[in-house]
Length: 118
Image (cartoon, rainbow, N blue to C red; front, side):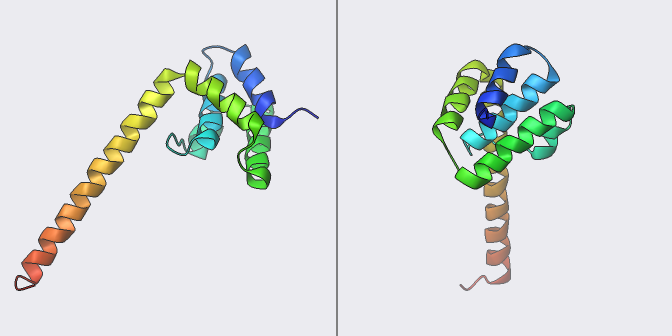
């Protein structure tokens, strides 16, 4: 039986520029490195039944075994060959950080307003 990560990697390498290729790359990248997460809806949305079964096999493999050498191999390839996905996930992460800092500042300002003597 073929490892699901390697099966996904082979599909990613075969179908350049397709929505399926991008979705599989997002799945592999998300499992490989939690700093580059993409939602499962974003991954599954454009996929047909075959690609969906590969994604679900990868997710099940990750649930059973966590990070494996095959995932590292697939993830490393995606990381090197999909710089736009890395750039996008970094931008999303930075935007989340900015928003969280704003929320923290707002909470602190509200605390100071409500409890000025603390």
